[in-house]
Image (cartoon, rainbow, N blue to C red; front, top):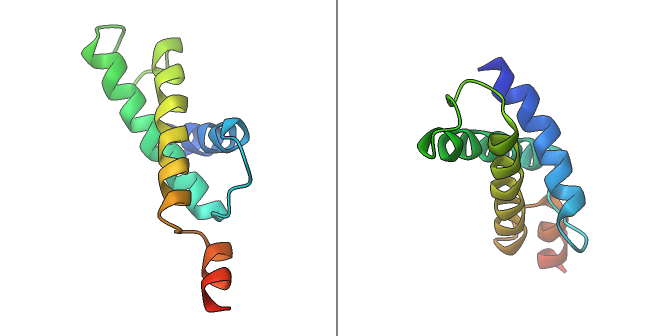
Length: 90
């Protein structure tokens, strides 16, 4: 479980760097998107037979980044970041 958190932080940062445009989500949302992406990437890699969800492998890492990019974009689209709340109050 600690591995998901550590990998999730790294994956969330990478996903945020890869996602085009400026995201107004906070650090916690970035980490949360990375952890979710890590879990989804591990599940997909496990389903296609490249390893277990609990082990780090290349395909799982690639799928995790892709899933985290989708989660970051969804969080931005749903205006879940603190920067978006400030814009709505104006």
